[in-house]
Length: 242
Image 1 (tube, rainbow, N blue to C red):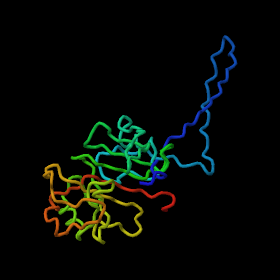
Image 2 (cartoon, one colour):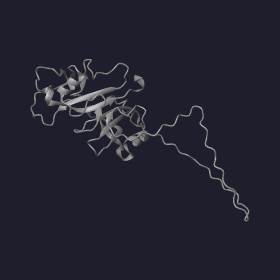
Image 3 (cartoon, helix red, strand yellow):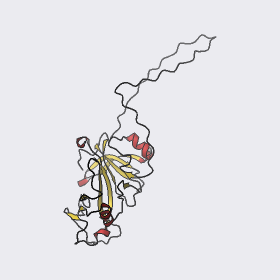
Image 4 (spheres, one colour):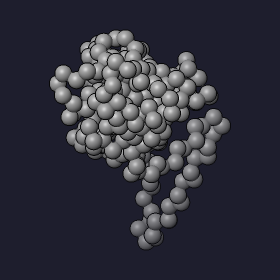
């Protein structure tokens, strides 16, 4: 992941109010009722107010997540206590980024959010889920724990992926034009990463290393059951991608 892209922070605005003292009313008279000040009229160029968002109950990616979503909108969606700024989100090759964790203490709903500007947390660029048993799923039907054989069946064609045991190990690199391939005109990228299933033997024969391998590779006849989807992510477009 490009370090320049992972990074939304909330700009704080200070509101100043001036207080006026009312003149004292004559002793024998009741004070005149106050007239409410008229609401300020919207000015040309003012940004429209964003409607309140309904809380998320179905954990689908991308769902309500979008590049322009802010911290307050995330709190509306997931609850204020479930949105935490994290200074040390993991990245490739040992890098760390400032971002957001959703449901940090709940593996069934936990997710990591990365931003184009990591200091201001503006421009959501990547959402990642990688906990076993996670309730999150992609809107194309891919979910954590799905065996490679089922993933290829869902795609309708063999797919290609990088071998395991390096920084980009297991990432699906090519859907070969199958049902899960990116659609023309869709700026989002839905990604899956394979890993050994928890019940796989220690010396399981599966592709290793930074080469590309196919889901129908005859050299690994058992990989369809041994390899499972261990990570889901959605990449959102940046300004240079629009």
